[in-house]
Length: 368
Image (cartoon, rainbow, N blue to C red; front, side, top):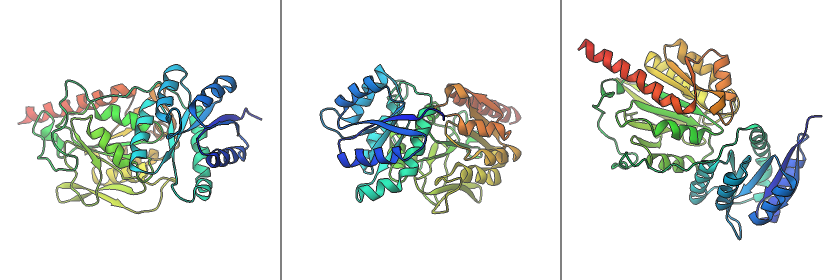
């Protein structure tokens, strides 16, 4: 039998510690080797037991989970799955935890804790399994770049079409991004490099309801483009990025010469809602050769087949390479489906895309 995944549970609630330990110990491939009710006890337990993964609550006595996570990822980086509360503050703190290097998170129910956690059991152990094989990196919290002024417009306020270097192409081109585990930081790495006259960007990141609003707001404060949650029926504008709301499906449609967002309560696809497959399939059908696809870090195969459909329809696709992925599952599957035009390190994807767009812009200018 292969070695079991050894897990330490850190939570100030005795009930949560007991429930998580029971859920973990029911699995044949993992075991809970210890529980701690605060980070100071957890610190000694980690030193002594050397776990493969820890689950970490956010709000705890003596030292909160974010402070502990920051110290842990500086001094002894290891796979961490956050246990977050489904509140506005909980969502904001969870985004900070992912920036600091947590692999993933589970949204802890506010009521019916025992039944709620048991309903989430499959999700919890799946995330622990992914964390156990993920590439762990020290998180670096990126502030707004000094050379880029903070956006003057509010999220969600329509801006006029861009007229800069990319402006001639930005109304017809569409950039489509799919990601899962590790994707919040990977998406940020791409978006902060996009100029204000970028073509519109549509994004599906696997995320539950209640967290994408905070995710979009954090990105909006860092980027030259406007970043917001997609709203059903709104026009998709250049200089904007639209994130699929958690728990909804998001795809692209046409209304005359414009792209519009469609957000609905359609069924899960590949077990996901939102699903990258849904977004990419719509891009293949509606956008065709004017699309660019980007597949970033994540577990599983969601979006791989649809990304090949995009390529067959004429899109140009970028896939993140294994060395820079937290989890190489979705990019690996996209490559296996023959969907990739270029496989690049994360920090080179935006630059390669912009160079290609500028080359297209130059060709347009020469024809005028």
